[in-house]
Each structure stands twice: as structure tokens, then as C-alpha cells.
Length: 456
Image (cartoon, rainbow, N blue to C red; front, side, top):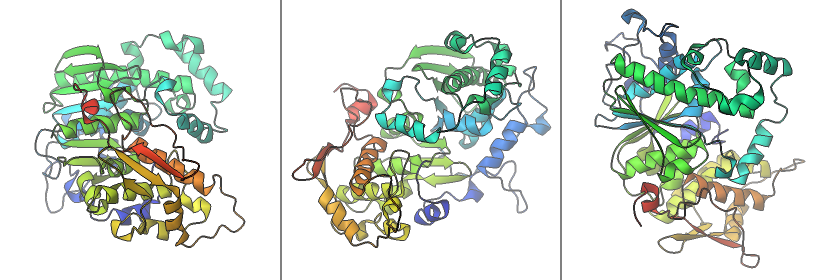
């Protein structure tokens, strides 16, 4: 679901935070009559001119020209960070080989001419996820199961049983197969992991092939972070494998791994272009704003729209860390993957949108206590909402107002990486209020050294 605010309302809220489409993805030579292409069309064009089954590139007339770009994207050395799950779901249509999909993902990431590309998958270990993730899956996939006939067909093509998947060898011929139903395989948890295992291998082959064909000459290295924390770095035609010891790779969810990877790079004063379709990334930069020092260029590419992360922070941040953290908290009011929207409790979007702006904050529910801690006050949050129109009618909300507000607080900490510490904590604790004061103290400033994986 991502950020629960509707697209039209979201675009109005983020007015002035976009990178103009005209300057983003025009392919080929620019002229007064040149056809302008969106990022979505670029990806569709890229998948249309992938390598054929014999592994050879198609003719140059069919190859997408991505050499001419406006300087809107960072003109200095920068990294493209790719949300693997989102990227492959966009391009892995039926009758498409894994290698073809992987090449499309890398071509789309190369649109800004980065010097490095990092592609990160979700971790398969359930212990790396907060308990809220299991509940999300129960809701998201309720009643959605892989049909028996589809399952039989898939395992017949693979010539194995489900129990054999963990040890199934990913060979090069498998990467060229076009008879696997990716969409059906995504519907089964174990098959989905297997598919991403295939795609991770396909990325490595695609990178080597694209380096050999000088298709990504501007890229110095391609990094693939798999579901098992294996890190593979491809430089030209050489491949280096190893296991990650960096903090960002230990988180379970791909979104969080991507964002924390981006933060690592930004803290090193290098620009980043993020690639995903998940609007959670818009929330993440707002949630990290209270503790982030000044950062270089950070762009968030979502489908056919590109946002400037610095402008998002400037639009909503306010003048103090207290403004920033309260703005981020109220941004959760529209709902996220782990919290229901306050509209379920009878409030109206038009009123909730006003709470995101610092000048509209009356009594702030979150107070900064010191350099590392903040305090959430339920009574103050209820006081703010008391001033808003509320009409439930006969509707019975799924969660009580108190529960919804506490879930919003959890998401604030989770998306903002506020829980990161030297102990390697993977997610924040579920907020618990003091029974008498109705307050909750939490860490709002993460350990920068832990994010950067440097000595304390």
C-alpha cells in the first residue's frame, strides 16, 4: 500500500517537490519536436530491446539511446539504489526471461548515468522483520493462494518438488527460460523467494554482459545484495563475493535496506537516486529529517515521477527538530503498511493534511527531551484531534484511536531508522504507554556510527 494518501492529494501536498518530467527522461537528441518519455516508457522500451535467447544484443536501431540527459539528475558521481522487489515486479511479465528482466532493471537504474548501482532484495529470514510484518501478510494475501493447477504446472516445468527449492541449482539455461509464470510464482511465499533467488543470479550475469558490451560504461560497479545477506560486487568482468558486515544489510525489509543504504551514502556526502514504486520512500525521508544532517542531492524515482528528497524535507520540515518530528508523525495519519488511516476513526483527509505543516501544529504530541530521546504524549495527540471534525456514523473502526496513534508512532520510528544502535537492533519495539502519564519515551536519533558501520 505504501503511503495511504490518494495520488491526487499526495501530488498537491508535494507541489514544488517534483523534478520536472521534461528534464528527466528524454531519450536521444533533444529538439523542439522531440518525443518526451516518462520513466515508465523508458522501462517498457528497455524490456522491448533486451537480449535474445542466444545472449546477443539486438541491432543498434532497436537499442534505447540513453546517452543524452538533462543535468537535472546529479551531474557528479552518484549511486543508483534499486528496490529489487519493486523493480522486478514491474518488468518480469510472463514470457520474459529472468536475464531479460534483470537487464531491464539495470538499464532503468542507469537512466541517471550513475557511477555505481546497488540492488537490494528482502531478506528471507523471518527474524529480521518486526511482528507487524506477519499481520500485514495475513491481510494482504488473505484468500489469495496459488491455484493447484498452476502449482502443478510450475513444478512440472522445474522438474522438482517444493521441498527441493532451497537447494535448486540456478543454472544459466534457467535464466533464459520464458515459460515460467512469474506472476503465479509471486503468489506463493516459498516460490517467491525462489524467484528472487533466480533474479539475483540473473542480475550478476546481466551486469557482466552489459559491462562486456560497454552498455554501462559510466558504471564502475554493480552491487547485488541477496536474500541471504550475500553481497556480490561486479566490476567490469570481475565478480567479487562476500557476506555483508554493514548495518544496512541486516534489516529484513527491502524498502528499509534500500533507504538505509541510501542514508549511508548520503552521510558520506555523495548524491543518491532511489528507484522504486513504493511511496513509503516519501515518508522515510520525512521521518529521518529530525536527525539527518545536511545531505547532498537525494532523488526518489517512483514509477514515472521523480521527487527531490531535499525539497520534501524543506517543504514540511519547519524550523526545529520538534517541528520535523511532529510533521512526520502526522504524515502517518493517512495510513501505511503497518498502520490504518485516521479516516477509519472518522476524521477527514482535508483536515489531516493541514497537520503536516509546522505552522498548523497547535500542541505537539511529540517533544524532544534531549539529544537522543523524545516523548510521545497521547493526551496531546487527542487534544489536537479534538479540534477536528469527526464523523464515524455507523462505521466501526478496525483499531481504536489510541491503537492507531501508537501504530503511527511505531511507523515513525521504523521508517526514520530511529531504532538503529550499536547493538544491531533490527526494528523498534512496539510503543507502550506509561499507564498513569499516557506517555512513551523513545530514541529518535539513531547512532550515526552504527549506520555507517564505523567504530563507536
